[in-house]
Length: 490
Image (cartoon, rainbow, N blue to C red; front, side):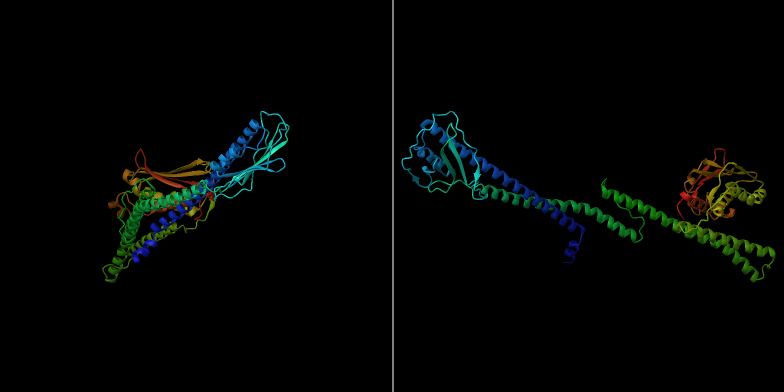
């Protein structure tokens, strides 16, 4: 019983009910239209049949009058119409006196001899037929009676002929046309029932096959929601369900990748925090045990570890704000050259310690840019930090800047270091990504600088890219628009 109730609430049942309602409405509409059209055609056909019969009787009367110049003996000729058409026919003279009556009984007129009022004529002039006393379809009689005047060449009335259907005893009645309409309605009913059964069976089968694929997707979603991120659905074909399956697999790949990155991020953060904390713990325990004395040199080492720890925490916090779109940027118009020169001056001492040359190539006609100068300075600092770290002693680091168009400027940091391997370029801006993990700890980088630079540039509505220089070394290049009103809010 519970299974049946579940089926009643299922999409399969609702599809069947919906299709059934559409089918019933469609069949009902078609049936009503066919019934109406058939009824109209039957009416038209009965009109034509009765009009043709009336015209034939009219021809008999006309021909008899032409041949005999009198209608007194026309009764036997009209008697045949009674048996053929089941009609009664009444012929009266111009004064309304009966000449002949053909119906259930025969009336013999009182010496209705007619004097010829004009010589025989070639064509009788009669008014057109017109129906009167119409009856509704269903009893087999479309018209009540037909009446026309017989006139001579001088357009004088000779006689009046009135005719119409009648139930004459002894005459086999014609089957009513309404029987045909009833047969048609019955046929439409059984055809509709058969079409409904076949249609419901087909939609049940087809919808069941389609819903099987949806069931597979539903099961996969439940499995995936349970933590099995490696679960995928099989290929389901080129139709919409197949596209939905491909979208699910693509989404699953992204979620699995994000989960893997999350786990790696947690491991990397824990490792980066562990290193300075372990150093601080070691210094403190050594001073506590009297192994070393709290000299200025020792305290400076501890202070450097605390600064490194604080820098890492701030970087992680900044990335979380960028991911959430909650970082507020303080835009102002400033000269790009001033920001770059300020950053370069900050790295001069480190460059001299490695006997490196730090140069600039900045166009003088760069227009002022509306930007957050502190964040763009942070971007350039991170790129210079990366360049100085990976450039050997005696190398060169160059900072370039110029305009790409009237509304966009570029900044590039080039070095003569080891360059970027081809398999690393696509992921060089990932968090905690290091081109050489074995050397990363000794060089002091946590692997967040390039990720922060990328997010800050994109927050300004710009783009950033990395590539290896043909002459050796790496090139990091980013662009930002001059007018930040075009950038999305952050």
